[in-house]
Image (cartoon, rainbow, N blue to C red; front, side, top):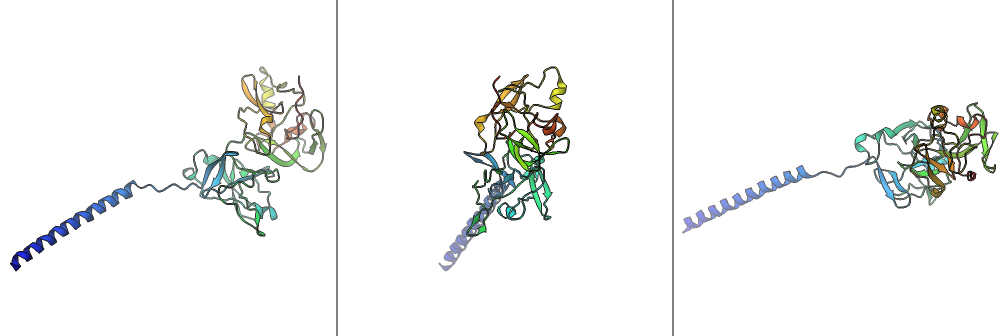
Length: 309
């Protein structure tokens, strides 16, 4: 009897061990299969977020908003001292085509050295910043998802991938190397004076200056010619059919007209142009002195509406 019990126990142990082995192997197979199929969420160094009011804008990997400073008229950081405390630089030397979010191009990013020797990432030629408002007596970085720095002082704006109008604040320097400021109370266009001082004017997304032509009329380009290509080479039309502007500007004041089959952006009825000798360089304003001050003013928020024909 004892022998039969011992044999039965032995068989039970063998069955138990077989079941245990099968469960172990199955667990290992399941675990391996699970690991093979698992794809960890991708981390983007810079990505796009969307806001119902502001649309699409740039953030870092944690969702913290990135900003432009209008006074950075060239690819140079002009925010120093107390400004730098409120607006810390954003730097991501690890940026590559592989770790950028959808809708962003690696070729639009760069890196500069600041006046203090630090590094800063740029986007479309503009240095990128965080916003760190004062809270409890100290500058505290803005939390992810917030855009409290938008339109701060009329010169700070969220970094967007699709601006068609941006604001720049800088000294105007003509092709004659003279410095100018303007008075927008002039009718119908601003009057220019040789003087030192920063002016706020319109540029495209990459900081290239935009101008108006004094003789133009409401939504009427009187300069460009269908038969004289040289005119468009000297003062190229701003060929654009999208209107994406900082929140400090009234989008309804912009429009689109047709100029010999090309779509051209306008502001308050004034057709917008580039100046050929600016060579599409960020911050260049050579056109303000050509052929004389006030003939081709930079486009600016304070313009009066273009005169009706």
